[in-house]
Length: 267
Image (tube, rainbow, N blue to C red):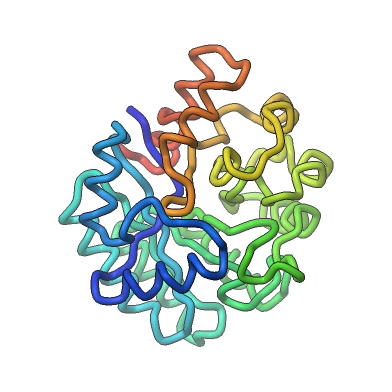
């Protein structure tokens, strides 16, 4: 089984507009039309068995709608597992986390750049504690982002601070722990047992496989998932990147699907 643990879709009515805006900001031509049906078809064409659809509440008013839709989509689609989200500025965020858990949503996504916070900001601590108590993983964007190119909101050192402060919190730090900041990832994050990495955009931005191996060789292999960031990186490119690494077939199989299946309880 191959599982892409980092992909994005948009509601049909806004997909075209949203993708155009993000394409202009990133300078990347999207691989899909951004819709649920289009993304599922595209994944199937590339022999990706399942994918994690990471939803983000970019405003406080969105979280209920996003989580309701995620729960509905999880009932409707077998190949797509949708996460929930809360917004740190919504005063009802903690109650919404309990509702997310009750809806059997497997994780939440937080994006420090889009949601306007730093990962080690104290106003997030109640959310981190609640997710720890609920055993609800958080997938974070980490490192550089084209949306905020001059200000990184999730530096590896700050992420490590949170991992140590909340040792029961399962943190998935996307983009190998910090997009474009991989030396800092090696220094501050590798080896932390409650920290997980996905490989999203590594095939696009990593200068060599040596960089990936510096991280992989010092981190629990079970804590690393295939990710693409589709539609911004095509999953076949992401898979090829993993296949190119000097790893055993067993380790490649873990990264390509086994690890994410166990983490997200995917059957």
